[in-house]
Length: 194
Image (cartoon, rainbow, N blue to C red; front, side):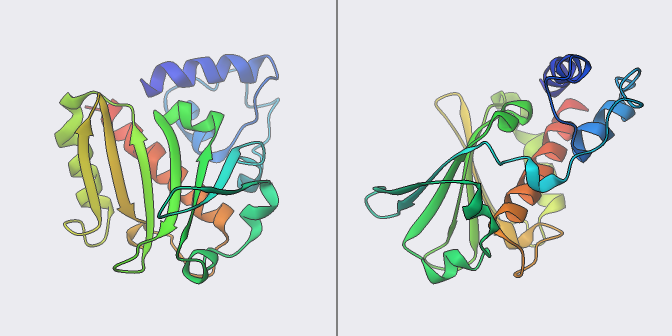
C-alpha cells in the first residue's frame, strides 16, 4: 500500500504538485524512486505539512464541536490538552492517505493523564502480528502503551504519545502531529517490508 501511494506522490512531485518532506524523501531514496527529483526539490520544513489540514476541536463527553481550528492552533504547546482535559483535536489531512490513516485525534487520557493518540489504520487484518511487533518494539512500555482492535475492516489504534521516541513535554501540538506522522510512516514501512 505505501509503495503505491509513494509512486503516486513521486509523480505529483515530478509535476510540481506536491511538497517534499523528510520522511518521503528518505523513502523515495531508499526505494530508488528519487531519480530525476533530487536536483529540483528541497525538503520543506516539517511544520508546513499540516497547514492546510481540517481540524476540529471538540468536547470529549458529548463529542460536540467547539471550533474548527486553523494552523495557528498547531503552534500552541501540547500541554494545552492537560489544561483542557475535556477537549480533543480531530485532524484530517491529505498526508494521512499516504500512510493509510483516516484521521488522527489527540487528547489527554482521563485516567492516566498521558497524551493519547487515536486513529483508524487502513490495513488488512492479516497484518496484525506485524503491527503488534512494531508497536511493542517502538513504544517504551509496549504492553500498556497501546490498544489495537480490528473492527469494521479497519484497525482502531490508540497509543500513548509519551511512549514514542522523540516526545517532549515542551513540543507544540504541530510538532506532536509531526512526530505521530513519522511514527506511523515507519509503521507503514514495516508492514510493507513483510
